[in-house]
Amino acid sequence: MEKHARASSVVVSPAEADGVLTAVVADDGVGWSGGSREVSGTAGGIGLPSVEERVARLGGSLQVAAHDDAGRTVRIRTPCP
Image (cartoon, rainbow, N blue to C red; front, top):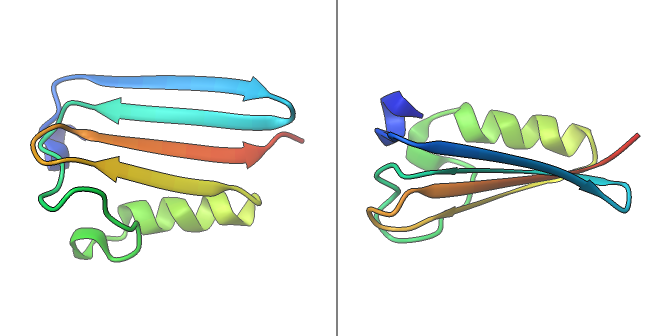
């Protein structure tokens, strides 16, 4: 995150409820211009699309919210075994 988002702070918040594991990762980096983005094809990289693929194999979902100059929040939800 330091390299790409130039974040100085990252918060990871894991939680489990009703058989679902949720992990939220939020940073104070540079975000993306244009607001929220789809994961696939972001910035031509493979980082988030690769994570999305792995989460999907577990039957979960990945959401990314990013705002101009306000950082990014990634939310991963997967069923608990």
